Length: 111
Image (cartoon, rainbow, N blue to C red; front, side):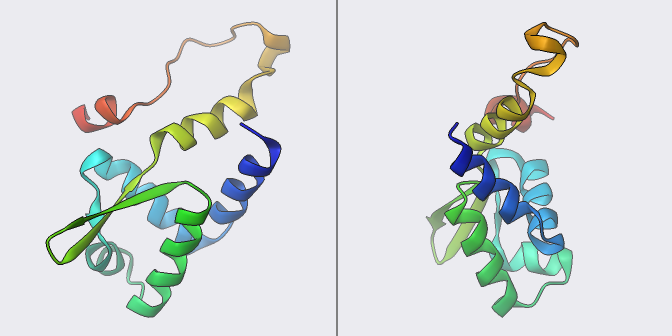
């Protein structure tokens, strides 16, 4: 990832409501959740939800799709893993320091 992409993602997450939205969507996995349900879950009014969802979308952290009359939002795991990879790529001098694997949409849906 480019520095500018990571900065945009971290900037979008540096706000309590947006961080909460992103965490809820990560928990939902690729199925995602409708904006109204996210707002209800986090007690965020619809006018604020629109703004926060737009910011997360512009940062590439979430994606949306239409299902009937609803817009369903889900976490963009590729971007999330890119940010994590960027932040940890030189961890321990480039040596593997802990076992782990990147999260994928498939593994998130299994949890």
